[in-house]
Amino acid sequence: MKLLASLASPYTRKVRVVLVEKKIEFDLDLVDVAPIDNAVNAHNPLGKIPTLILDDGTPLYDSRVIVEFLDSASPISRLIPDEKRDRVAVRRWEALADGVVDAGILVRSESLRDKKERSKPWTDKQVARMHRGMEQLANDLGDKGFCHADRYSLADIALGCCTGWLDFRKPGDVDWCARYATLAQHCLRNKHQRQRERRRHRLHPQDLQVHRRRTVRAGDDDAREEEDLDRVALEQPPDQARGEKAVVEALIRGERLRGRSILGRGAEHPHAARLVPEKHLQHQEVHM
Ligand SMILES: N[C@@H](CCC(=O)N[C@@H](CS)C(=O)NCC(=O)O)C(=O)O
Image 1 (cartoon, rainbow, N blue to C red):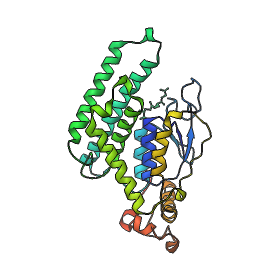
Image 2: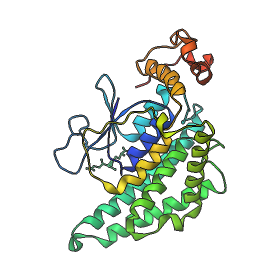
Image 3: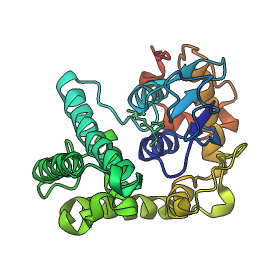
Image 4: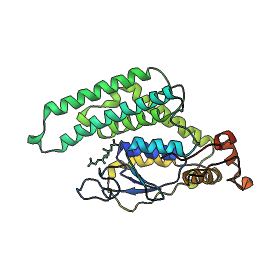
């Protein structure tokens, strides 16, 4: 599958982190969505990124639909709970974090217009919306380690992409992470914890298994820091990646997995059974 993306896009980053957490292999195509005619229009009438193109050519958008698809496509690292109320709570975190980013993007776009064309009341309204959103996120987080139910979920990813982007672009010239320090700390804590987990499994950069191909270069140098974070997240041991890859590929093809039969070569995939217990392998289907 192929992700049409830009390295600086916070919504795309959310999808990239989910792909990495789910250990799903993908190609990354960097596209420039600024021109009226761009490479995304042919796949997504809205001309927006992220757009995910499945192996059969089906395009998926927007980021919330894509993450839902990816989470249901593989049982590895479930990020959206099954239980309805938990599910809604996690999706609400995502909606709020994305909503703050939506307002931040409007502020940034306005600031890029010619000075005499800018509207201060419009910018003020969006900045006020961002502050209300950040306050709500900070209140909801309190002193908890994770956004929802004491475990890492899509809510933590969405929050991390939100504060990461605010720190990167600083829309409205506000130092958002200094102002909402608990939110920034949550993201840093999560990032370091996940880096430690990967180190504990003795992962090295040369073990990188997810191949990233760039067919179009957007030339956004500002995004180098974003790329570094993903590079850390992309590390995983090769044998584990191979075992998981077999499972994930089968699931994405829509095959119903039963026990270990689809893996067949259990000995060649020592991690597959551990990572995907039989009870999880049953009744698994790709939901579109
Ligand atoms: N709600 C969408 C937002 C996507 C979005 O606005 N992406 C921006 C990049 S960060 C984009 O493609 N903008 C192009 C444009 O508006 O022309 C999602 O979650 O995927």
